[in-house]
Image (tube, rainbow over all chains, first blue to last red; front, side, top):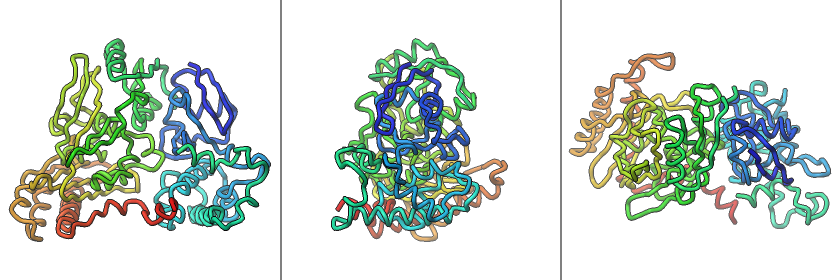
Length: 185
Length: 294
């Protein structure tokens, strides 16, 4: 079946069997291998992507169900110039990853939380991120990272902050995933 | 971990869904949020020849309040119930379901139709005596949640039936307590207490094939909600269950936890009933929400 989606702001068409999961369509048909598959039955959270602004386990959704949807994957987080998203930068700064396998899902879940809550407590961060399993870091670095990203994004959103200085490039070019995902909600 | 091949049809109405299921002749399966079905397919525990996707059927994803009844379409997501403020009991129960990426997809109708005894919605539906609207080849019918759960994963649904709507009364006061090993896991023991039209309801989930109402506990509470009566009601719940042993917990432990969690849920209901609090509003960090909007 033909499936038309918008993936990270670009139109994408794939022709897949109905049993093809969204995760496999992203990885195998579109070459976006940043979305990782751990358990393939909805337990580990590694394959979490945004679909129409909502966090979704892409191993539990079939690609045919995403027809007409807007999908944001880990590849859509950094800006066009390659500058890391605040959430990505925070994971680097705070040692929020070791092997990196769970990181794409962690980042999407963190982004979802920070779309909904401006200043989550450490307890809230743990609660909301509990659907993503990491087997290396012990989670402290991850909680630190989400906390730092929350701080940074809150500063961006200050009306008197240096918002224009932070976002790179052409203001008409809608490449910031925070903006696009927030609008989609 | 890949599903066996199946055909896929996207239903655009309840009638077309029923028709597609009829044509599949018992080998069709409805997919809503897919949060239980997709793993079952991936592990090949089921191999339906046809999936009928109901996600795009218009009009069955609404939450409507009619006086003290909440009318919900089958496609209402767990996340919608977490966010709504009509029924704090539902918001409180939704908090226990999985994780954000599960709650954004999983549906009320799907959970009830799946009839997993360890899931939150079946026990809530049993406690509130939810009215379920089911469409089939010969039209629509309504049934009470008490009759709907026949056994574990066994709802009172024919192969070409589709659950379309769930009506639940908004209780005057309520309590919800759950024991699970990790946040987001299915419940080992769930206890729901609700006061509906002046009469108490107590239901226990997770310890039998179907949610259990405890009439003995309800009768005790109808007489009195003093601490001694609350304790006696919790003991009545523990006496009414005969839980099994498995690798997750022993029968003895489960029975003890039924008493403890029933006690917690009744205490919560009684305390709320006297102070008129609505703690459901605190299920999400509401101050942060406000800050985000401003």
